[in-house]
Length: 166
Image 1 (cartoon, rainbow, N blue to C red):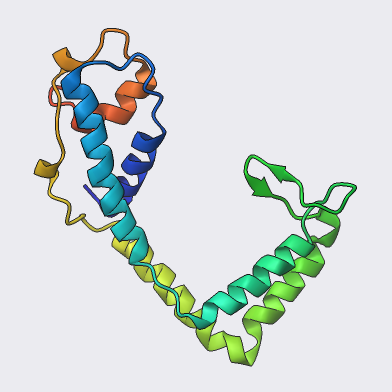
Image 2 (cartoon, rainbow, N blue to C red):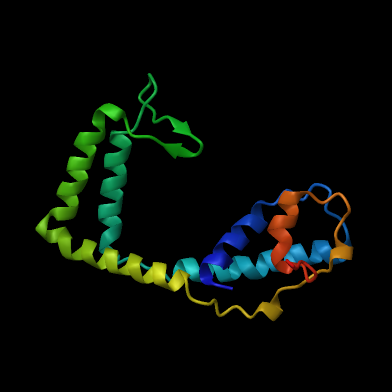
């Protein structure tokens, strides 16, 4: 399993709708695999470390974004689908200020480091995970409930032994 697959599987498993899922072995496998994948996922995410000096710039850019976000009548940023949106009338100004921050001589070297860290991290995500797959508990098709949904089956497919494509 590649590192990116560990991240995606851990996220999917943590968000699965367990309605209708029953059975001791299946329930235990979901809980155990969720824990194992969650820990490995945390290790993967922690491998991407930005220099401390980047935190100040990141905070400055976050403040800049929030100052240019769409706001309600009270001036509070509008949140839609857990995200903020830039005010369309302020996009050019925002992009200009971000470019100014990124291109400033004192920040250029730092942003070059960040780009290299991001590039290395993307490469790392495509590498095989050190997670030993025998740490993951598997189940057989006959241990799945009859009324399992397609979505549930899709999320759990990594741990089902008889799931074969022929």
